[in-house]
Length: 388
Image (cartoon, rainbow, N blue to C red; front, side, top):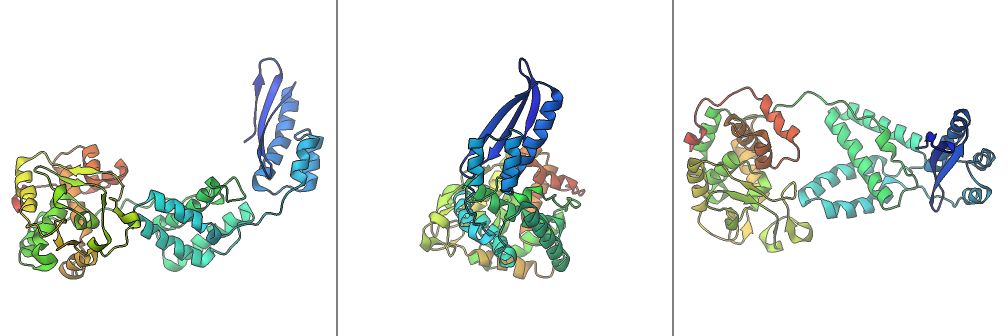
């Protein structure tokens, strides 16, 4: 963006940047009076904008020379513009996939790519040849898709984020003809009301634990799995890949690990499983009773392989976990397996744990996610550890 400012000895200084086909030209010019500087700034800003978007004509170049925004020699670079092959989103996808494979775990990769592929089926072949036209096309597409599919504002913003990311990656890889990402110019849809997580009441938790003792699902470890989900707040895959080495005397470690192909039904990129945020965390509650009643029950699970919940050498199938809870136990209720994690987080807040501590235990990326649970009004009226 062009800039004008007072200079100590030379009057007024104007700084601007021009984007030639093969290089970026940084310019610095001076004018004696403020009026002349502002007049020059106007022309410099105009031509800078043209070069950023590659929309200038030979006539624009000649005008820039006349106003001394360009020298004659510099103008030759702009008059010899090579033919630009404007890409489509589908043509930029390989660069996005390469970036995604390096920065995301498998679950995030699969989730993002599912949305991306759906979008590219609709608009992937449109050439991105003009910033304003492409911006309007994306705005209209998201608006129409939102109306037809009754999408929430959050989902519509997800659409915008996926398209923006594809172009951002291409810009960094110098595979995109514009410096500016058109999607960044689109205003995001306003946030909707905070969604209150569904949390088990004390009675619902008591019923779940009582019933889980009677079930033989998950190789007869349905009760133990329920304890881990409800009292440790693990995500589905964190339990799936929990090893006996992860279960210490006073805590459970959630950490990346190598998984051999014969140990899982999933296809893991590079043979490595990462937690959702990619980092290690420890589920540690400074309470001897919690450690004794929760950790000890997990440590007492018979060793049948590397994983705590396993059938011989293979980790428990994630679809078996999902089916045991969501398709069977919670089939006729508004609860789901993930509600157990919501309940753990809420219980930790109600037990007085500071929010940064709860954020860490939950593996949240930011404190705002954790703060959603402070909206839940029901307070603990009984000792939750007595449920075990």
